[in-house]
Image (cartoon, rainbow, N blue to C red; front, side, top):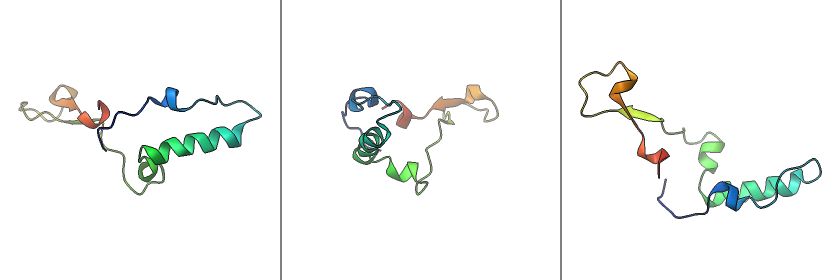
Length: 75
């Protein structure tokens, strides 16, 4: 994923979903998914990256303490 400065999802989705505007809302959300290049993850072509990665500074690999947050989720 690229490190681009796009507005947050709540800023990008202007029309809030209600019982009368599903198609408009869906089209708006689909556009955000395409622009942010999440379509491969949504359709399953590309697997979602793991939330945690092994900590290179840790000797143990069996506990959550030996894991670090994947930077792709932070940026």
